[in-house]
Image 1 (cartoon, rainbow, N blue to C red):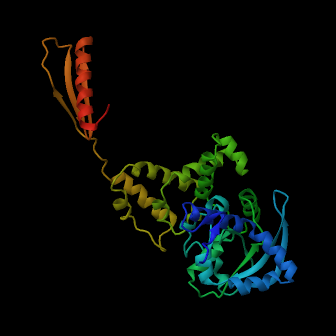
Image 2 (cartoon, rainbow, N blue to C red; image 1 turned 90 degrees about the vertical axis):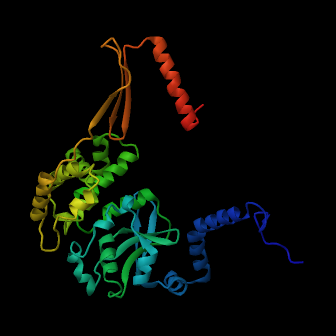
Image 3 (cartoon, rainbow, N blue to C red; image 1 turned 60 degrees about the vertical axis):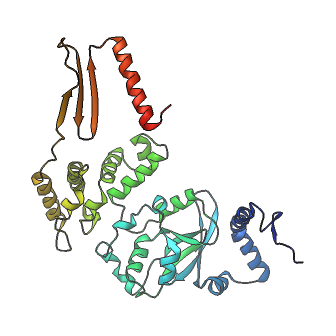
Length: 350
């Protein structure tokens, strides 16, 4: 009789076998880069040749070695990825790269049209599990994807080993070769630092290497909804004054349930510049009728001889309040017990 396959002492049909297999697979993946390096040396096999044969990655002979912020030396090799590989096997982590991919479009990427003929600078990436995290070159990646295969390949300098998140962030910051991040993107990074425990703007400013004033403006920009930014052809054209104007628009529309409907009436497009769109938004918040506060309905529950005593019910929208005045302690206790009994019956409180 054939024996059952066992993983760490467990057969396939025993409880926990699947979890053990997953843990073993994860451990194998962690040690894979170093094991691959050793095996290639022993077998005298070139890494470029191996990547082409096993993963379909066309590699060139170019490679560089950089010293990361931690002091670790890392070798990067130049590889060429197809459209399908870039689409399915690469991604951009905002926490590392800092570029909001949803705000990239044909218009604000038009300065990269030379990629149609030649990619002068490779993107920089590292492997995270089975995908490539693009540390630098996310705009070039976005432009390449917009062309949907019209450009033959996308060149990436790919790290051979593992890179820690802190090294990846530092490398992405030092390699930034495209447009400076806009105020909204900086604000989103400020929010990440705040969520990580940096509570004061001074701490965040120091961590990002910018002024406290810029942190304040950036966090205001980050509070503005993306639906407003999507009205503009290129968010990078917005000035500090423009962001201030958008902050006012955001406050005026923040709690409106008809926000999407209102913004759909704002004309935008390639022929509309920043000033025209801002003027339309200003006009919108000036003319849109303010939502009326829900009317307050007051009902007297008891008619007391003493005018200073009262028991009434107030209804405002979906909020209901019961108010009592000048009741004795025993009367209040009796009402409390009645309310608690009703709540227990309705909601099962104990």
